[in-house]
Image (tube, rainbow over all chains, first blue to last red; front, side):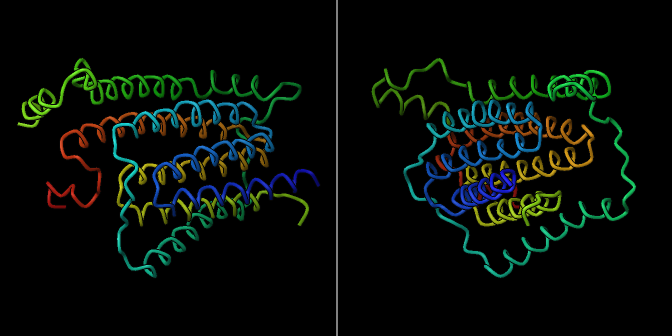
Length: 187
Length: 102
């Protein structure tokens, strides 16, 4: 009963928030709606008993990803209204529906064949975090290490790309100096 | 109706995926295109977690973790590239990025 209420409530909220993210013409509204949608998605993980995944969702997405977006948006002119592609509406809606139906087919096909066996079943008498740790550090140890290396590479790439000319303070220079620097950088 | 099963979650995941696809198709601003890809990744995460729960198998949750890691690193590199592009050209519209005549 309560599970159903929670599911429908959060489903409605998530769909509403992500619709705002996709449909609004203001970048700041999109950012806030996306952050709210991420938090509401973590509620599904808690309902499903994946506590650790829910905590990771909140920490990584609303903590790290949204903060990074917010810092990134300081570089861009976000107060301007976002112009949209003037594509054919029917083509867009048709393609989206087709892709969604294909996703359903991908998920339903193994369920219909009905021969799924749990490879790494949930351990009895242990919490979600313990079981996640058991599986992650035994069966998925190498993908875990590879993911760590990938995150390191991404961090270095982000620092190198975004950190260029960070030694210049744009607020302490006057406008002529900034223009001169810009000419040097752009040429 | 009151019993929430796997299909409920899969339908929800599909709806969110469709919303993300609409965003990918209609956005011209690259930053908002990134938002739409985050929606796509999150909708798949819901499906992974739901399947993991209803089959008593932790593999789905593991893949959801890796999807989150990939999303984070994609964002770091993508935002860095976006900032470099904005410093050079002063906008992040997709239509102006035609230097390769694609």
